[in-house]
Length: 272
Image (cartoon, rainbow, N blue to C red; front, side):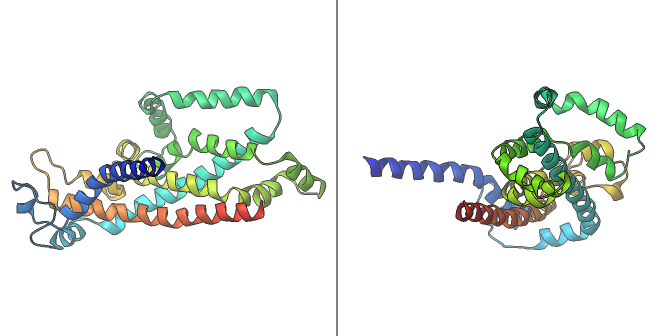
């Protein structure tokens, strides 16, 4: 009976994983099909004629270097600021003892109950009045504050013993030194998790670049993909291949930081 439960658990897990990954596999395989194969009935999973013409057309039609630079600049700068802000805010909320901090934390937590559409209009108004409309910074500033990151870091810093901080203060370390030299190194796993989430959020963001950008030269990859969907026709072959190309950086970042998470967890277990 115990072995049967274990087998069922693995079968269900693999089944759920297959359901999730099948559309991604279909996207990847379809990007190597010709236009006449995409909508031919009956549908076939593997292409009869394997072709790279779709990728060649995407690279010729798209100014990928410009779009990748814009998207990378927004993503990297926003992610770094998000990690620093979330870490500092989470540390302060976890370790500083003021009565009003708990009230402030619950007020921040309440903002997660508001849909993005509710604060989009006032955020755009502030953005416009600051002169950041149609600039890459206009896509960065409204997105750097995330309560998810603050909550993640706060919950970790709560588990850090206060005696560790007090010992550092006795040794003469100031608050900045304690945070940068002591707190940040021990939360590498949490920073890696937040980096993955933040990178994915900004890389795939569509709404804010759509609102904040007007000049085509400043478009991100997601906005550039939109140009392939016309009012009367969609260039599916180029759209599929371009979509696959935009997935590669996110996959690379996940592989890199996933290794960092595992290394941090193993190190913490050895030192503990």
